[in-house]
Length: 390
Image (cartoon, rainbow, N blue to C red; front, side, top):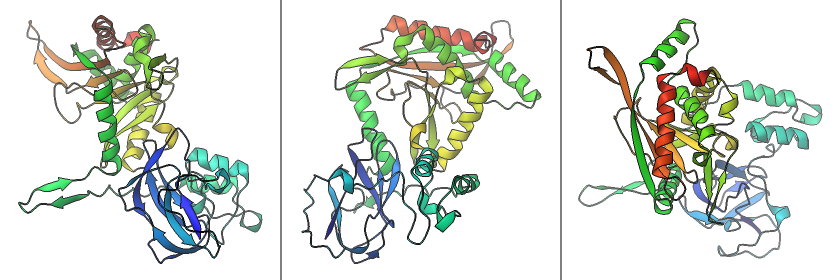
């Protein structure tokens, strides 16, 4: 009897939610066949079977959160090993399959360690690749061919609910919604939030965007806020910090990895524009567009959702003139961007204005520092040539 335990996925992950079982008790499964889909606070992965056999027992239902090392299911593979209970938690490292680098399906190709590493970096499952090398071995050209194919959109996360006798609907927190629930709760319970707000004249920013469009350079508004924030962060480094809960201290980051809050069918996702200070406005705009598109299709890679140092959330495209955003834990600050409002100034001249808000962790950031930061961002956005030249 083979006892399968939730493997160590890495990246500090200690638990995962069973999103979907791809097998059921009594099924005959093959080595490398997908068994279960696990969602962590980092990424969702499909874990293949390490053996051939028959599924004799599934320990937990979908929606259950389990710790790394917990027994998930038992497979009758013909061995004499005794069955284990769901409470068993120790698993030899050598028996842990890698959920990020899945082996090819039975009858298909093998791959060299180098090809496996490249497949992992690209987010490609070897189970989806047909090898064309000697003996069916997967080559780099095979990976390139798979990467060039458009991927089908991932299905939206199913709602888990039940209806009461009175007709009310009770929603269960599962999948991405549970992760949002946990993270937002931790942020508000751990960090004493406070928010400062400013009104900005976005007419110069709109003019700059329109001039770029005239030159066939499409740029959205969000990249302006990203670039303005990065320049301001270099002058106010405490806002580019992350909280270390275990040591109760902060790390001031020297990289400027800006998280972009994205509305997806499954819930809020924060994708990361890494090294935003080294990229032009056009490059940031293109990257945000690509990240948003793939986030809505469920195609983001692990490295694209981790390591952010500061977040920008733009709800203005949907509506709302003001909000007090919750900090993207373990960061210490988040910039909220809102709807553009048409008005006229004292002289009767039409203007376009917007409110921006900055929520901060008050344990590290004082009100005066937050006010200086948001004022600096305001100045850049009202005169974008200043930060575009930096």
